[in-house]
Length: 455
Picture 1 (tube, rainbow, N blue to C red):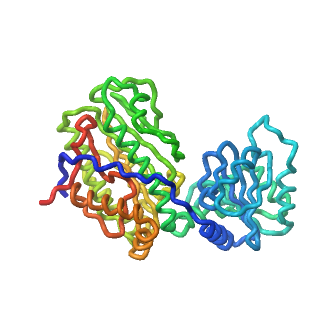
Picture 2 (cartoon, rainbow, N blue to C red):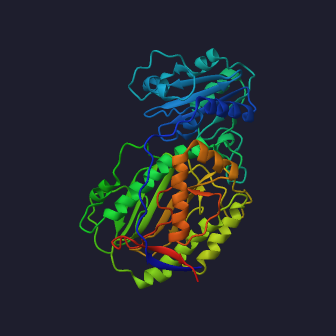
Picture 3 (tube, one colour):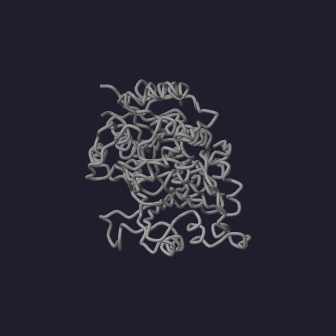
């Protein structure tokens, strides 16, 4: 694969206006599946301000300032326990729920005297002695992890919640987080056309925001001033916005500050909204650096193009990992993390892509192309992260039928990648970012980007 720099103008930053809606019927189906696959008499799903994605998937509700607990039981019983402010915000749920006030989920110093203890509330809902309870937190231990006391016990949920369950049932609860988050058969790993449309709303807007920053950044600006170009419009975020610059070691997770950016600095920008994250990193200069281009840019983009062109339904995650490593050749860096992962309203759900993984990529998966080159020399940065969905012929037809505007955007992005960037992608690859794989390594050479040349 021959990689070169070419003048390719940035494609239109075409983003949707209205957020696609998940139907009440789909939320109900998700809840029923969660209950059935958990195999317990009752299922509890915990969430808080940061770890809200499981609740969003099952209800459309996120706790904002507080915590919340979804209780799913027999005969379609669905109860949402919330704090003081959650009572008001619960109207955002996308399906019928009983709302119960549980004030320990509120912030400190707020009223505490109007709700019973959690164990009492669970008993009033119907949770009874000797019944089995599955609890989902925001992640779970896997069997092959070192120093795990018991992978079957709820690990990422407050202990007082677990204690309240065991107090009322007199049984040990089990961790059922994998039912939602397993990278192959988790309910959130393979999603519907409507969920893909909702993800594209955030992914396209996040990528447009990043590219506005890249196109407008210049020496003499502070990082904060440069970040203004993102054009934030209130989109819900999946992570802290990132803009960092340095003439030495670069912290690629840092929020923007007052530092003045200088010509030649390493610079990175990453923005994630519910649905997808986009990142671009490079050098804040106009003139290409021959050494950086040859030693870093070319092998890195070869790996990016290989990732996209290898991506396919049925491919084992370990095979995609190997393809990326092979494409890097003898480059003096490797992916910092998994070269790709599942994404949703949380930036990282799980990943079927890892060394040796036989987990296969499936229709309905939403993924991040996420190859972070590490280590790079001081004063150097490069990154090109975008969001993509996989869809077989039936799912593609459903997307085109239910979301025709989205389908037009996808077709345009596919055409751009194939005809302008030279990256050959399969029919089942649906880019959700506005300018997928469009990578300008030199931010002041605004349209000088990496391409794959036909030879």
